Structures are given as structure tokens and as C-alpha cells.
Length: 506
View 1 (tube, one colour):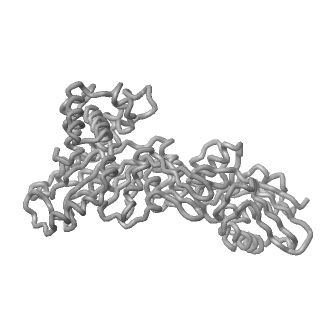
View 2: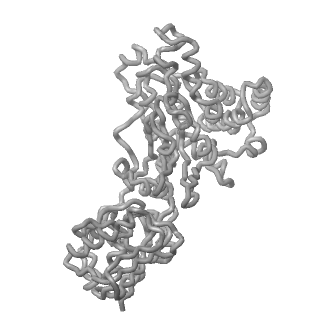
View 3: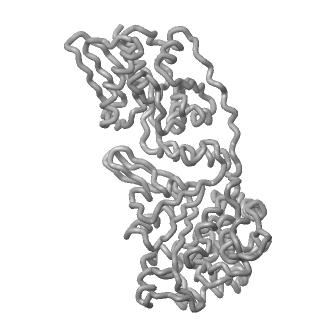
């Protein structure tokens, strides 16, 4: 019998599809034919597989080899099929039993000496395999920690083809040391106690973390905007296991575990440079579609420093994911949707030189330059920002104080308590955060007090706010009410939310 098959997984975004890898060895002129819509990296598997087989002391069949990846209509990309092709080819050569590999998923890229290298997307691939009824998977040893997060499927970590062949032929293998999966709940490196002064910006960060509201920090260089933004994840509640798996799956697709542990329960923070492109921000690619910064920040914080310096259209590309919580990328291979439920934090100087303020600082910019600079933040984008906070320079008194400010642990405790209040209120609904309350519910079930609504309607009539702005203010007022233990937002809560939205000091 010169025919054998095994299993691997093709990924389209976060969605995996189990692929049957069939190998047929027939008489004829020596050739290697790969079928099933492979991309360039997959087409090059022939030489990697050939070198790995020969260098492991096995025999490469000097005949016509046909490799079929089915379903044939599904585009397949990447080098993760190398190991599956290698094992199926050796089974077709009758050097290992074909029956032993038919219901095993093999993932891994081969080096020329037969070593098995790590690949992207192992976790979403295993999720797809489990849904298809697969109960065993061979993965690169370098991906074993990530793969171990998948329950209900036997994970076998291997780092060389020789180890895989020995296991398939004799049933013997070096048992991989079981990883004690300890979820990492805290980041001890950053703390809000490091921030000197800035009570307005600290309160805005607490409100943002409590209700999931987007915020713009405007202030001169060195005022602490970046410090505050980087510490927002430390006051967010730790991720649930399901949320952590979602984050891990996205980072697995992007191959960004160098910056984040697969077992971290800390909300991610992604800080793209202000020169980033649209594709880097929202995701995309010509051959392999990867998630962008807004998807890598899923369930966490997307922080963009020097926001007015971003190229034209980059920030506006965030308008759709800010509303929908997902980003859909359309390419010739199909439409791919990535999750993008993030908290957006923008930081900006008040003018090009950064010294403009109402306190007589030595600003060298003209009024036209100031208007043009902040005008780079488009109106539709700013309408989606819940809070605009002025961050003043840190004064001598704050810098001279020896006692530290409030710690992240204390702020996080208040955030968790306020979120629990909101969770009880939303127990019968599909949303959990105040920022996610639908517009219809804001006009019916979750209206503030009558005098507060009258105030907002007056602002709407004067065209000081838009309809979206009215809804944003109500959502922030609910968060302020939760922090202050108010059952329903009062006029004071709504006025405070309105001030925050207008960029007026708290």
C-alpha cells in the first residue's frame, strides 16, 4: 500500500479547519506534486521535508510523490504542514503503520536536520481539532506550554522527527515534563504609586477601567501621560480564563508571545508607534492575514502616544472596531474577522511645541498651528472618545512629596467593586460594562434622573453635544454612579461626565 493520510489544521484568521494530508507514492518519473491551494511557504515544504527525511536516516522515495491537502478549495498557508506531510509520506513508504497516524493532528515546521520548529496559531488550531473530534496532537516542544492550555485533547510535544518516528514505531517516547499551568495574575513592574500628582488624570483612568470608556489625555511633554496609560492594565480586573484564552489565541496567530506569556491573566496593552500603518493597526497582509494592534489589544488597552502625529487615516480606521468590537478584513481568500474589544487611550501634546496652556508657558506656536495640530484628530473619531482630560505639568509640591500616591492594588479594588455593582444590574442582559449599554436601553431602562436628562436635552438642543455624545455621557455617568454608590445617575454625575467629555478639568 503506497497511500497514507494524516491530519493537520489550516487557519483563516482565528477559525481553524482540519485538513486531511494524503500522500500517494506511484511508479513513474521521480516528481513531487503538491495539491490543495498551497502558498509559497507551503510549496517550499518539498525541500524541507526531503532534507529532514534524509538527514534522519530515512529513505526518500525515488518515485512520483503526490501530496493532496483536502478540502482542496480551502487556501492553505504557512509551514505548519511540514511535519504532517513528512509523517504521511513515511507511512506511504510503509516505514511506519498508516493506521497509527490517521486520527492524529501533526503541527510543526521542519528544519533541514529534522528538528521541529515552533509555528504560529497552535491554540486556535487545537481548538478546531477538538471540535472535529481529534483526541491526539503532536506539536513542537517550543509550543507545548501554549498547547497545554487546551483541555480534552492529548498534547504530545516533540522537538525532532526521530522522536516522532520512535513513538509511532515502538510506542516509546520521552515523556515531556508536565507544565504546572499557573495563571499569572499580576504585573509587579508597574504601579500607579509611581505617578506623582495628577488627580484628574488618575480619576479618569479609574473611570475608564471601571466602565471600559475611551480617554484622550492632553498635556505637555513630561506631564505623565504615558506613565498613566501604561499603568491602566494594572487597575483592570484580571482576565477570566475564557478571556485569557481569547487573548492567547490572537497573540498565537500573530506570533507575539515574546512580549506576553500564554498564561497571563493581566489585560494586554499594545502601544504602536505613531508612524504605524493602517494594516499594522487593524490587521491584514497579502498572503497571510495577521491581526493588527487593535486585535492584539483585545480585552485590554490600545495606547497611542503622540496621536496627532499618526499618518492620515490610521486613527480613523479604528472607528469601526470602536463601535462593533470586531474588525473584519476582506481579502481575495475571503473575509476574516478578528475580535477587537479594547479600551482606547490617546495621548497628545496641546500644540506642536507642547508648551501651550492657559498658564503662560512659553509656547512658540501660532493659534493657527495649534488648531491644525489638534484638528488632525477627526471629529468622528473624537465623538467616539468618552473623556478628554487635561494633564497639567507636575508641580514642585508634588515632586517634593516623599509619600507615594495611591497604589494600583487600592484602585483595582474600587474598580472591581464598581464592576460588581454593574454586573448585578446587567445580570439579565448580554453586556457587562457600562460602555456596552445599547442606545435603546439608555433611552428606556437605564435613563438617569429626570433633571439630569433635562440637562442633556438642553445641551443637545444647543448643539453642544451630538446624539452619540449624549449616549456616551450617560454611559460615563453610570460608571460615576457605580463608583459613588448611587442607584441611578444624578444630575451631579451627568454634569461631571459632561465636563469630562468636554475636556474641562474635574
